[in-house]
Length: 308
Figure 1 (tube, helix red, strand yellow):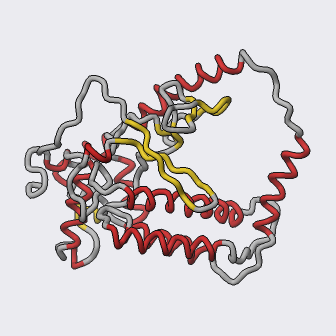
Figure 2 (figure 1 turned 135 degrees about the vertical axis):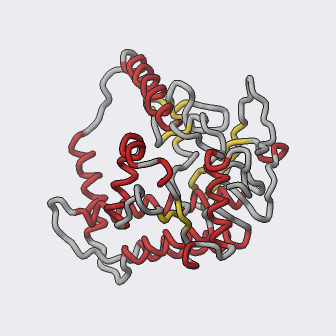
Figure 3 (figure 1 turned 60 degrees about the vertical axis):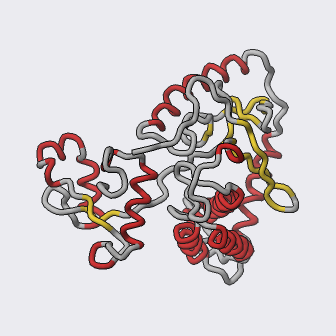
């Protein structure tokens, strides 16, 4: 980190640290030539590690057989968090457009929501801010909304039939494609072409690959036809959602021709406030994904260049 952020070192923003790690590996300086570097915590000593980092230590032991008290932990950048999500206002109402129009009766809070407290790069512990502060705001908003409405006219039988029909559609799939292979290929293409470093050509390949995976997803084979605690069905439906989110991420990344926070384009390495100081709102329509721009509201702090 002396090379990448000498004034902040390992305490630099996480996007800078991630790019530093990836740059070292891309330059062939990974441990034993592999795609990993070492995180050395040994100087902290056993007592401090056990006090402050017991879970990190246990994860290293359980998954890698490495004890960070006596050994270095092999690490690499990974997808940890999304700065996007369900768009909401400060009172946790879900909004539907760039004008901030509220959707009646729909609220979101926590890591699924995007109330825009992060910008392009989440700070450590800010997910707690989302959960605690906006969780409370959501509860108050729901209470206020609920006191002014009556019970909805929901037909329980119809709703149950609708959900069961969705499950049955998955159960009946008897194609030749492996959902495990689709999931692995999705992970691989997102990491290699839409990960720490991005560019136009990589993102185009990524989107094309994801489109192909979507087609294969519809031709998958279900191996477990059981109706009780069927984790395969759950994972298949989850995979479908993941493919949709991956397409949203890659499509929005291709459109944003700049670098900002966790989004870094090697072909557009500078931040461009003139053209891209906005939120990207993605909509699905019959012709594919449509992206609209929602203005950023600037109050007290004006955007400035990051220098370390």
